[in-house]
Amino acid sequence: MNVCVLGCKSYPPHEYAGGIEINVWETTQRLRNKINFFIFTMHGKGKNVYTVPYISSHITRTPSYCLFAFKKIRELHRKIGFDLLHVHESWAGFFGGYFKKYLKCPLILTMHTIDSLQPEWKWVKLPFSLIERLAIRAADKVITPSYYIQSKLIQSRGLKRERSQIIPNGVDLKKFHRKGPEEKNSIIFIGRLTKSKNIITLIKAMRKLPGFNLYITGTGPLENKLRKLSPKNVKFLGFRRDIPTLLSRSEIYILPSISEGSPISLLEALAAGKPIVASAVGGIPEILGDAGILIAPTVEQIIKGIEIAQKRKDELSKKAILRARQFDWNKISKEICKIYVEYQS
Image 1 (cartoon, helix red, strand yellow):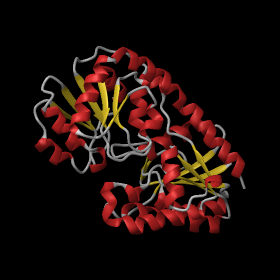
Image 2 (cartoon, helix red, strand yellow; image 1 turned 45 degrees about the vertical axis):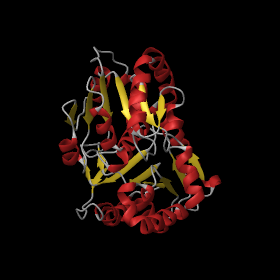
Image 3 (tube, one colour; image 1 turned 60 degrees about the vertical axis):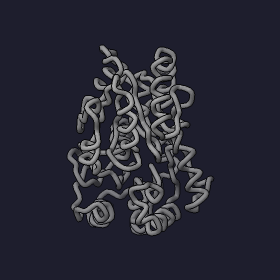
């Protein structure tokens, strides 16, 4: 089976990779013995990986890359014939709706999040919501990583429940089982430094927790601003590839977001057996269950959550490890493969 994949910005994942890139990398690596994948990406290398040009700006890069990919997709389709088109996120779904008419094959769309509801994109909410509607309408099957995203798309974007399926993101359990010496009173955040992650509120909380150290891991558009606002007990680690090691050294993982889909760093923290403090927003409660402390994304709640997590450390650690087993990438990949088989043209 030949599957064309569009919407992944880097393959393998690099410094600016997000959940899409990790999802595509982890699932395609596990399914390569059954499926012939052809990956169209902005930055990539490897067998059947095709780098596509794009117009470099925050607004234009994704739609331009999707559009420019069509020429190469068309050429390859003439040579080998694609059985399925699997696209990730709304812009790729929008263009995928037109591509599938030419390719004459089913379109699978994974909606990792709802961009039009993110605070970073509120000034283009209306056009983005239209793109999302058109992408969903064009897809034969829509995968969402959480019930939260599925229900939002059903309520506001015209998704039909019978054409959708929830398949969560996953985690490589083998990478995150390591144990190491923990730094007492250390807290770690992992993710893009954007408005939706609510780091400014976390920094305000750290001013009232002088006995704790916060390690912010990741990069993003707010990095310079956050550095200027931070007290001495907040350290910026930038982009790191040694996330399993950093988690093993940290006492508490925190995610104070005001908007979330299905954050992979939360799954990694579960697999590492960390006491977790996370906002009760988006898909977080579905992932976390009772294996962590759910809070409102406020200074007071962040402080209270950290104090409770530290007191219940051993209990939460055991629950986290057990919870993580539900999200093994091997299981997730098999669920995606079932959809491929079902819709093979």
